[in-house]
Amino acid sequence: MRLVQRTSLRPEARAARDFLAIEGLPLDELRALLARAEELLPVAVGDARGERTLEGRVVANIFFEDSTRTRVSFEIAADRLGAAVVNLGASGSSASKGETLVDTARNIDAMGVDAIVVRTSISGGAALVARHVGCPVINAGDGRHEHPTQALLDALALRLRLGKLDGRRVAIVGDIANSRVARSATHALVALGAHVHIVGPPSLVPVGFAQIASGAGSISITHDLDSIIHDLDAIMMLRIQMERAAASGIAPDYRAAYGLTSARRARLRPEAILLHPGPVNRGLEIDDEVADDPRSSVILAQVSCGVAARMAVLLRAMPS
Image (cartoon, rainbow, N blue to C red; front, side):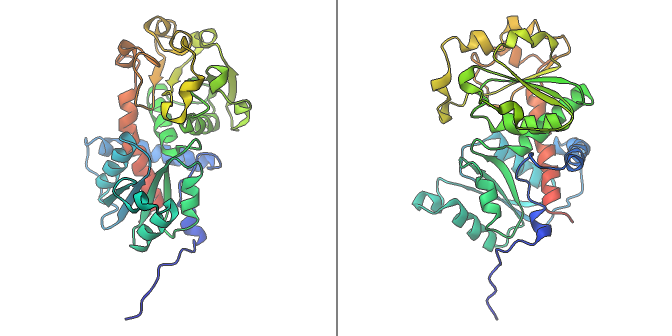
């Protein structure tokens, strides 16, 4: 028997099944993924049975950064489609012995997995892995760069409540500088025609952020949430990224200026909706009664949409 080493060369068709960023994703592909995710939503939440399209496939989740929602969401998405899942974190793996992310991914790829899902604190880490393995790679969040499946689920949650996003006004509020969620969401929403208001203290809003995305929509930056709050269709509150040194850029009066308090919620349109990628720093970004208000909060609906969005991405990575 001849020993065959799996090649790390990436045929163009294989590379096209990577899902690394919203930036640069063709609009028709973005729309197709959203439509597929919406179709899959009943299966994702367990209200309907779908075909186990990925039966016999193996998905490896390489999560070298803490996560609950994203990791479990990918696990459930793969399971709903019939795929087996292997989970690997930095703790308890060879990474704790000094092995690099790329070497870990290459070894997992050599075991014959069909797709790798990567979460890492390294900006650009998912793309780095993709250049060194043969199977499709899905970015589950890489440093301050992007979180593309989060953008999909956010857009889906918005579309389910608001209908078309063209012309809708969406504010993204908080720690923009450290947020891959803000970057991916802005790319997606602007491409889909929404007007995105980037809101936060000057210390947490990068200069030039208004130029990062292009599409039918637009981006504007303001440091005064109260000046625009009455005109919004949706508001996305971001988690203050304490682990990425964001605390140094937060003034003691952050909640008073940017928190979604009950008083500030009353100034939103009655039909306006609230999003948050989680986990929520309650009492800082959002008051409890606002976060838990079923009339406006779609935070839990985002979680459900996340399973459907990740099912759609897995099917794109591993077509039958």
